Length: 91
Image 1 (tube, one colour):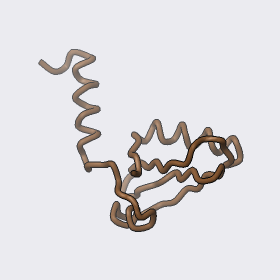
Image 2 (cartoon, one colour; image 1 turned 30 degrees about the vertical axis):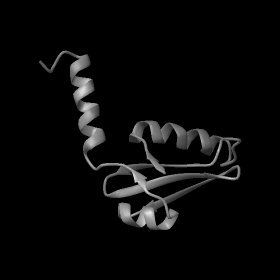
Image 3 (cartoon, helix red, strand yellow; image 1 turned 180 degrees about the vertical axis):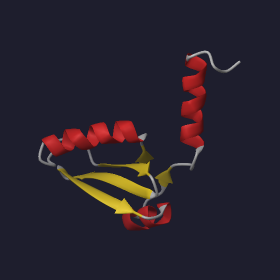
Image 4 (cartoon, helix red, strand yellow; image 1 turned 90 degrees about the vertical axis):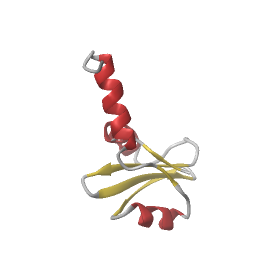
């Protein structure tokens, strides 16, 4: 399964790998985010990290031959709802 991350969290992980010269001991995984109209993945495989960009979510799924854990708009709606409740903006 390809896991969605909010852009801010994805960029933190991207920076971590960039500073380690794209090498890691982390387990294999695929993470992605949505930035403007692009789907951008971080692919951790056998100790190396790869970054790929796709135009559609279908392209992402076809490239990796895996399903994406993402419902467009749902994650952002949940984030906004939680953020608003924490600040007392929602009744």
